[in-house]
Structure formats: C-alpha cells, structure tokens
Image (cartoon, rainbow, N blue to C red; front, side, top):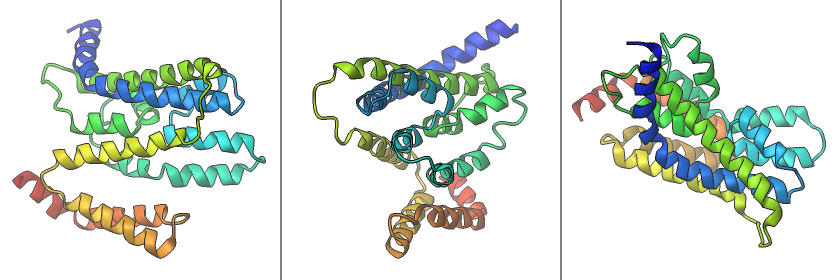
Length: 236
C-alpha cells in the first residue's frame, strides 16, 4: 500500500475519535484565548503558546507568570508539578510508541491528556497503520486547540461580560475525562486507589504540596501491583 493511501486510511480512522475532543478543545481554547486577551495580550500570544507549549492547564497559569515578576525557577517548578502526570503517560505508552520512526518526536511532544486517552484505549482497525493513526489523533487534537485559542484571542476584544472564573474550565474537563474512564473500566481498583492516595496526600500535605507526593505514591502502587492489576483486567 502506498504511503499516501496509508495516511488517508489512518486519518479516516482517527478523525471520528477526535470529534468529541474538537468540541471540548474549541470551547476550552476559545476560553483560554479570551482569558489572554482580557489580561492584556494580543491574539499572537495564545496562538503561539498553544502551538509551542500545548499544555492547557499550564497555559492558563502562564498568563499569571507573564504578568508577574520574572522568576524562571518558579515557572520550572510549577511546570514540573502540574505536568507530572505526563511521566505516567510516557511510561504507559512506551510499548505503543515503538517502531514509530520520526513520528515519535511529535507524538511525545503532542501527548496531551486527550490524545493519550484515545491512543491508549482505541481499537485500531487491522488494516490501519497504528503509528499514523496515533500521529493523526495527536495532530488533530493539537490543531483543534490552536484554532480555539487563536479564535478566542481574536474575539476576546469584543467580550463585554465578566470573565472571572474562566480558568475553571480546565478542572471541569479533567473531571469529565476521569468520569469517562471510570465508566469504561470494569476493574476500578487503580482509580479508587488513585483517589484515595490523592485525598490522603491532600489532607496530610495541603493543596500547595500534595500533587507530586500523590503522583509518587500512585506510581509506587501501580508498579508494585502491576501483575495483579493486569490479571484483573484480563479477567474482566
């Protein structure tokens, strides 16, 4: 099969999986672009930041970092803390990203929550090239976010209502993603343990310091219980 045909088949298979993401990213990106605009930035900022950073929650926080005093160490610490979950994504996708060639670099860069969710769980048709399928899922999600953020940056100057609380949409999105995975998985042991360890870390360490310890505890639990969890998943 020629490369053009392979790409076409992969795109056709990937696109339907990303349609729900388009709806969410269009709104979230629009919100982010508006938030940037009302904070005093032209549309170039959300467009370039969504294109190069591509980390929704961090992009919202970057607004305050840009408006505050120059503190690169704080920016680095915040980025590591907020995006620590991508360590788990990367470990989970080690097998999936094998033999993807040069596409691997973009797949790693563009692995957001939604792309990970699709590429990790989607049942790819046998006639579709897996690496190109994952590439188009990642690319389409990336373009959706850039489109929404740019449009929001352009339209933000026309907004006349109170925009306080717009950044909360990211929290809402993560709740929806969790609920979708909860409903899909038959064995909820790992999800329950994740909730328990996160809540325990929050109580013991407070909202400012609980994320990284919670992530470390979850990683330890998943590593130690990997075999039993896999057996449970196979049985289910």
